[in-house]
Length: 195
Ligand SMILES: [Zn+2]
Image (cartoon, rainbow, N blue to C red; front, top):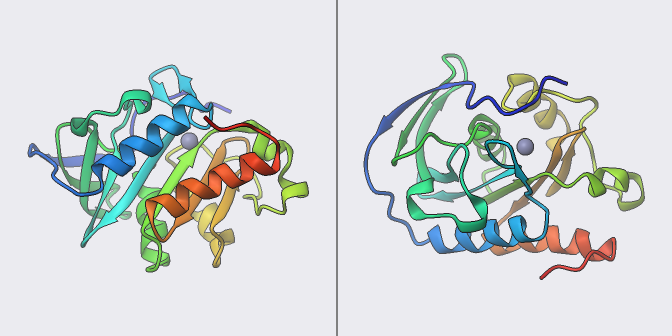
């Protein structure tokens, strides 16, 4: 579906600045757990997943092409503002933010109570979506596309766990732990062991 990784599909206005936040360690913990358990597997150009959490009026997100198995603080980017009209992201850090930054931003805008958004690729979830009762987007959309954003907003409602067709999952939490544990719960329901 023409979806191999080719970098971000928006422009970034990046201020080079160290990102300091209490949430860095939690993002590192969950990124490593996802990578280790195949929930965000290694793919050409990085890992199949991205994790974010709100920090005051901004949000932190893993960098485009970040090594989720061993996420360094300089691979976490702080996003201060986005424009869907101009496809521009204003950020601080030393790397470009994840290619799914627009999707994370759109969800945060639509759901003020959500603090953390974790996205990964795990085809086994989609194989079982009917059995698990998990909502799924109606059709495949390219990664990082506005169509993907709109398809997710269409089914978002008050859901906390969604699937992107032929792509992956999104877990929404009121804390990072909440978002991470929901993924573990789905794995448990499928008898997939997490370590
Ligand atoms: Zn993805």
